[in-house]
Length: 169
Image (cartoon, rainbow, N blue to C red):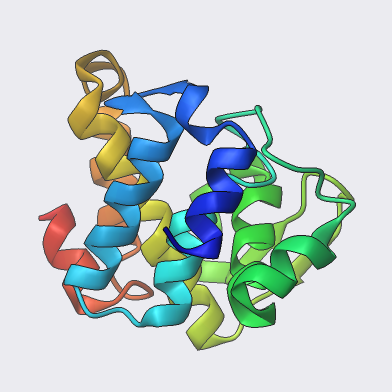
């Protein structure tokens, strides 16, 4: 078991219910999907730990966003930055206009920042694959939010990687 898997186990990811089993199961699926699509090891590590600080849609955190150094030491600064950005995202203020503005609003600080092309692509890819996995494993979420995600993620095609845009289709 890798250090990251041990860290997830020590932080109870296996015990937290989530669409398709436990949070741990979900994190493994997102990590595997990113890896299978060839999106790179940094995004794959971020995918494996993307819920560490909780999210706007899954508020249970494995660790505090005030202690970023521990996760940074475990997965690297670049992957941790993706995890923080993903977890900190204020979805209502960010998602609808992301493709036009490249701006992400931090729900912890209220700060809005503009992402460069690579960071924007990583953010969009992780967000899309996460939500597609949740919808695939929770028919209620798929029924309630499927049309919204289809419209939103289709509008994100210009900022997402071609591999991920193909998954939306």
